[in-house]
Image (cartoon, rainbow, N blue to C red):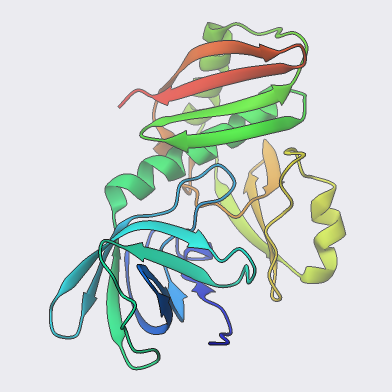
Length: 242
């Protein structure tokens, strides 16, 4: 079935956890809605999990969320069960994002943006989940220790810096491209906007992920390790203390 894609509600409502939507497509254990708050895996941030509830009160668990490989505007939700027979365009659902999974990812994702501001080198890899996060940098030598990184990050976090989402016009895509730190990831782009995340006065990056509104929400962190992953690659691993 040809779809117009899935409206990404999480771009402007990262703190909302429940929504109403209509099924627009399904295949095997995957289902797509006309709108969603479930963030699809990307940019190192895992896809959201949670539940959908049908009109009859029955529920299905969402175990994975990802974008379609061809139609990047279409978002698939993998359910714990077979949905192949689900009729399209007739089923209204209520969705509920697992906040216990989403919120730590928001905190860590914003913290990784702070880390980018400390290390003057291109980012070559990123991942986060379960209260941890890491960035790989194209960097032959580290000039900061684990304690120095943690102290600098915790100082920025304590300043309660505002974190803002900007939706730039598509014709500003080239401007956003110049700000990319991750050499293997292009800025998220739709027909309507390019999404930018700004930690006021500290960092601004094109980023499709979900973020906290203030650095204070990150809480204290520790730098667990700095790994040498190759002649030109240094991996920095962070962990939320709580």
